[in-house]
Length: 616
Ligand code: ADP
Figure (spheres, rainbow, N blue to C red):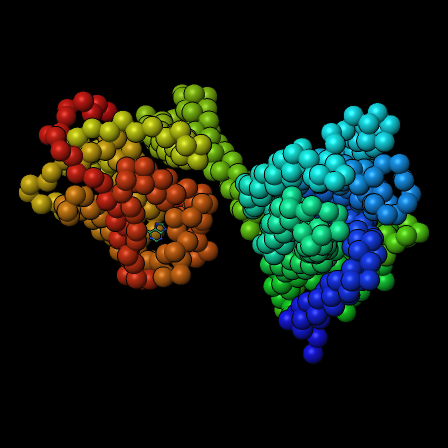
């Protein structure tokens, strides 16, 4: 198998063979060796440029683009340096100094590029400016060396390297050390392997520079070693850029793509909303888990099914669904369409449907992408509210009819009516007024509670007194029942809004009367328990089934099995619950169908003695 390790092995052996070959060429002619060595590094420099340039779109940091462009010019200078080398005979009038000057120029450019490159990470590079800048520097160097001849002398025939040349090599080595430091500051931006390759490249370059300070003749051993090291250094940079510009981008690209694909699939699959895709032929093509759950099918059953199978059985439901499908075929986007759809088990759900047509290249509608949100509960609540409003209006109207009727009769028939009859009429009117006022108070309390505007005026309340008030009121309304109070002798006060406490008791007492037969006993009790007082209102009435008990305190619930003729809108218990909870207490019921019910609620005990502020 062609593993990474064996690849390294091949590279190392191949590299060693090249270096040996180069060495052998130096035995025949140093000029041949030098030309090979330099041309090799020029080719590598060009390759660095070509790769950096062509992968610049993938390079997420400007390090390599900058380095690639700089290396093109370094390579160009190195090429001229090769041609100018002593013995090449191309620039006969210049001598060894020319090639050395070009060499030093190229090394300055290379080391400065390595120093600056890390500083450009994270910035946008303007390649045109970069090319122009590098061209200018290179041109100035060449003009200074060839034409103005003011570039410091680097080699004196017979004497050897000048101080400038040697010091320059040291300076260049320092710049290279600096470039390692700047690169390390930005090390997070580099892949570990790439960072290692670059550091190795720079260290080898430094070694090569130091070798070049040593030579006496351009044909000596230090020069040979320096060239070997230079080849190795260039190769390492080339490897680094291959890793960054070619291997990694694709790795990264594919990893990103795969990751994103998985994310989108998850998003689609696990979305709480139901997604459904259907072709122009009306066949379901895709569905996510929520869609399958909403419609009660498995996903396999759903895909391949005609959408028309989902149309509700009602004529209007079908008509709306067909309308949506026609609009989608016509290329129209459908938004927030409320629609009844049929589930697998024949039941129906209400959904909010949005459909987006998908088109092919020619613009033909080929598929839909639909989102469905289950709004069945919303609709139920809306329906409940509508029913409630209807019921309340009716319940407000009927006492008004009695009141106006009674008063009108009392007025117009005053002469004909006996005082007894008139009294009865007014009594009826008063009773109905009380009912009306009671209903209005409950409505008001509920609307305050729903709008979070319920303000309690709490104080220390004498429980016995409040129970008495509530009972007086109920007795004025209903004379049909026997009322019993059961209290311990010593009862601590509660911390409550007295009017609200009276309202809770009144509502519970009224229910006890309404839902138990005439002559039955209605019992009010209270006893302290920990930090609370527990109130109880019991009747000997019809009772409530366990299933109904859980629904009792929900908004607008009236139970199906109610004695006929009992009036009510399903408001009393909801108001009790809101008021009790506003006091920090809770309310519950214990009941056995046919054996009466007891409603319990708690109120916090007061720390202070009861006040006398409570005025009726
Ligand atoms: P309503 O105006 O209908 O009485 P409530 O909120 O006070 O509204 O009560 C809700 C429902 O709970 C009533 O319709 C009735 O079916 C049931 N209910 C309440 N109190 C009792 C009770 N003491 N015994 C039996 N059923 C009761």
